[in-house]
Image (cartoon, rainbow, N blue to C red; front, side, top):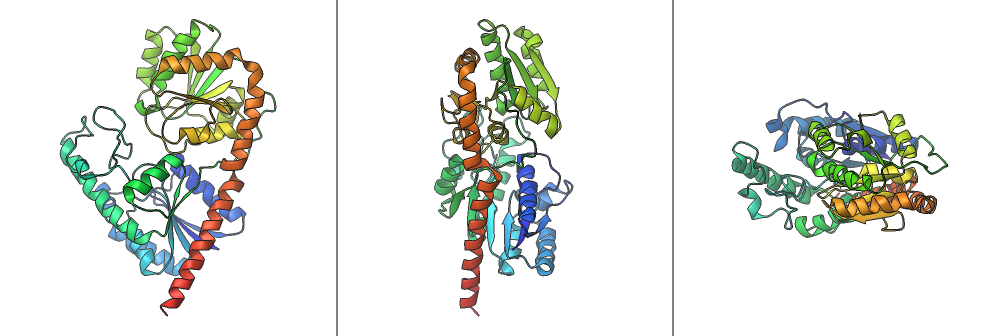
Amino acid sequence: MKVLLVHDYGDELGGAEQIVHATKTMLEEEGHSVLLYAPVRKGSFVGGAFFSVSHYFSILGDIQQFKPDIMHVHNIFRKVSPSVLLAAKHMKIPIVMTLHDFQIVCPKTSLVGKYLQNCETGFNYQCFYSNCYPRKPFNRAYQGLKAIKLTLHRLIIRKTVRHFFSPSVCLMDWTRKNLGVSNITLLPNFVLSKHEPSSNPSKNNSILFVGKLTEQKGVDVLIKAIAKVRTVMPGVRLKIVGDGPEEQKLKKLAADLQVSKLITFTGELSNLRAMKEYDDALCVVIPSKYVENCSLVGVEALSRGKIIIAGNIGGLPDLVDDRETGFLVRPNDPDDLSEKIIYVIQNHSLLAEMGTRAKAKYLESFSQQAYSRTLLSVYDRIINEARDRNAQFR
């Protein structure tokens, strides 16, 4: 099988890029031919945002030369644009699309409104004049342009994409009701795990956070929770792996709450170092305040047999069977989070059994084998349908 993968950026910067490159590696390991069309992170935002003529002709040339059986697009909203979809349709190449976040149902991509409340409607007429960007200059005009762009993109996507993949049930439901499509399959994220996890559960009281230090990740909630945990469990420790715009603010919060000595900010770590941090941790906390799709950190934690404490929001409940493989907490609630952390610390004896269930959940739903099985099944069906359809019109 010949697969053309398309993504906005070729550099590995975030979760979407990791999935694109992992998919390429997996397909090649299984004997398929793969061409990745993913430009480097340069160029005009305007030129690629609405409709990129240059990428239309560029992908057209790649299709003519590579002759793919299927085109699998990932994020194409910021640079490549859906112009590449029209090129593939012109060449009668069937298209499938992975939705990595909520861009298809929210011009802001985050489903978070002006007052940092979770949006309940998704894309509608209000998106053309609302003020979901209060900190941006000319925010209403900016919002209107984003809404116009998404209107165009949604129109093209509906007309060209044969099948969608969603990494979470939450995004799948949003896409069905807001985009109005039913041709969508659940395809959770996966990781190419090259490092075997430690066979022994951690005996320390170290809590781990891994991710970008942004406001929506809720690290401030975790730090407040640690301050509460300390009053009951003074031996608790927190490691924060990652960097981001909120780092200094979070360090100040830790100092104000007098828990700086309990918290280590490691900055960005290599994959090998990060895997060791997972193994050394008692549990992994994902305290997100707002919707996430399918957290790669959660998938990595499951692959190491680690229990997860996560916000009960977005796609995070897909990763956590409450009180079976981890615990779900109320978003933005340090009291609830601290109670669950204390419970985990006080019940070390439960961790081995819960960790075993977490690893079993990973193998069943989030492993490379599970991803490959679902992906190739849809590929085969869409390719065969396209061949039958093209044969009818000859």
